[in-house]
Length: 238
Image 1 (cartoon, one colour):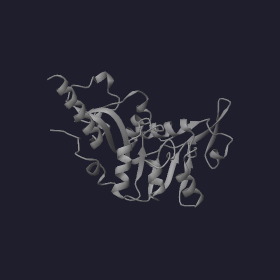
Image 2: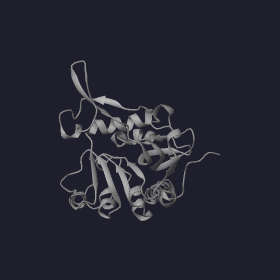
Image 3: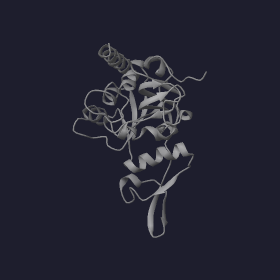
Image 4: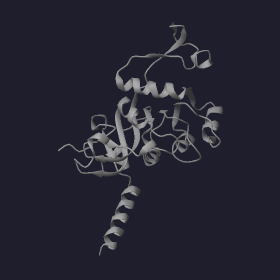
């Protein structure tokens, strides 16, 4: 019987080694796999390369991972925000490398990795410092630069529901980077609110097929919340 469900965050993250390249889904807090990031902090892997839309907020999640000195390099679009003090501190101290990528290019580089595309030409960033050192071509009267795909060892993403085969559905905009990251990583780990029986997910609504997902886990707090809700509903019906 195929089952990609694992019993805990600890089990899901156990084999991530030092130096791994990890994609982390989310657009701010929307779709951010908070419990997986917290689990990565506890797991202990260091010297990580992180691919994310930004460089963390406040003192939790990705920001905490950066603040703990566990990230060697970050590839992102929006590193500096009002509460990005951990990134600022580590970057200014020379302890964190930054690869700044325009958001559209970031998404397309990830998508290209999952689609098996060797590279693509884009006009975004032409004439800016971000184009320095990159191949440039003039196509149909417009300048383009060559960008290469972004691959990862692991992708940590968040979805709403899954079945034991790893098929995923998302909640509204929380899907953002998750689906393309799932295709671009060797091992995709998804945290979900619940795992349902096979056949309960409408095939028309499955965004990420289980083919791209290695492990699925329901965080303890989500499991507890579901159990409490079920207990309350059962009490109301007695």
